[in-house]
Amino acid sequence: MASDPARSFPSTEHWWWRNLPNILTSSRIILAIVLFAVLSFPHALAYWTGLAIFVVAAVTDFLDGFLARRFHLVTQLGRVLDPFADKLVVCGTFVFLVASPRMLDTPWGLRPWIVVVILARELLITGLRSFLEERQIDFSARWSGKVKMALQCLLAVIAFVYLALDEYQVREPAWCWIALVVLTYATLLITVYSGYQYVRIAAAHLKSLL
Image (tube, rainbow, N blue to C red; front, side):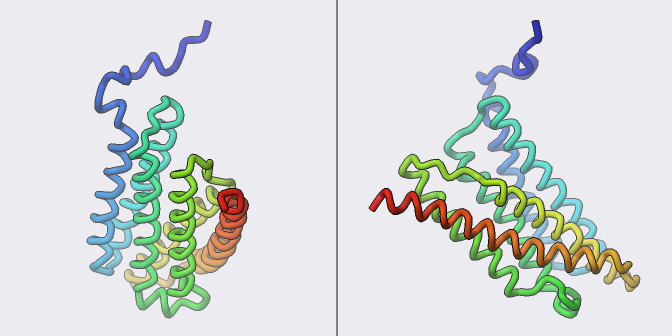
């Protein structure tokens, strides 16, 4: 008979194991602070370092969610802290990336208004989720939200590489600019679509509450 994978892991009586997803989430908030401090000094080394920190933060995002679901370690604190940490890392990163003069000079590159759309979507959906879940209404992530998150992370990675190459005064390859432009507007479209999808679902629930 197949053994239970959970038996090979520490008992939930261990404080550190029971709270491991929340520890990972908290570490992501600390990583975000370090990331923003690094990006305050725009230079090739800062962008490469920022890229490494961003990737580590993205990995912790995957791990805390996986552990929480797989080993039933979901907590109320985690349900609040995890989306906050995600949005802090991603949205904060975009704010710093779009502040680069080189990004603003890039044809069809990331623009402040695109970042504003991303921020507005995240704030709106976070507010709706908080309101509905307080009333015991399920408002969990849809496929569009997961695709949106994946594209946002890919866009950030390409933007880091693009800016780092420019700081080295190396002509960035055509594929890098093309990838930046494609991901920028693909991310914009899925952000708007997923926002619409969540608002439509929330509207249906709100009607039942009125």
